[in-house]
Length: 129
Image 1 (cartoon, one colour):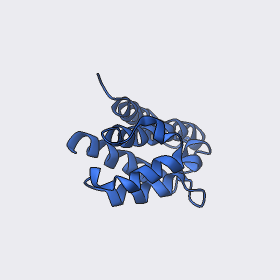
Image 2 (cartoon, one colour):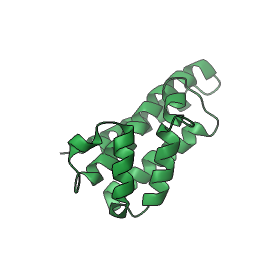
Image 3 (cartoon, helix red, strand yellow):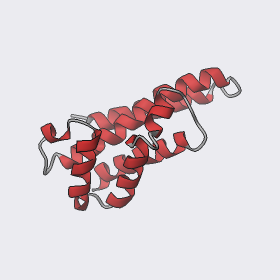
Image 4 (cartoon, one colour):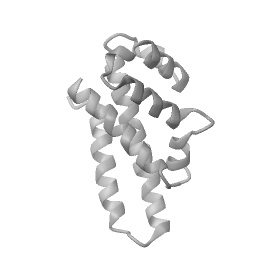
């Protein structure tokens, strides 16, 4: 069975390719960015949960704060754990909340790139960890 994180990752990359066809149409690109942002975020989150499931019950991962706590406690399960935790905090902590800014508002700047990098690192951990 294909893990959900890899399905999200694949769909996100397909959406990014579709988005590139609308170069110059910022309104349409913004809408695609929202979709790709959600897919990227959940690719990363599900990869983290799949790795954590080796040690932690999925019931312990009920929200972003609990998942972040478990990520901190079990950081040794990840080769790039510190980097993932840094990105995770940027994605979900209220003072940053890049996931919400990209996936709900379609903001870009460096936010979309960071979200993409977060998902990529998490997927690599799952595949190579």
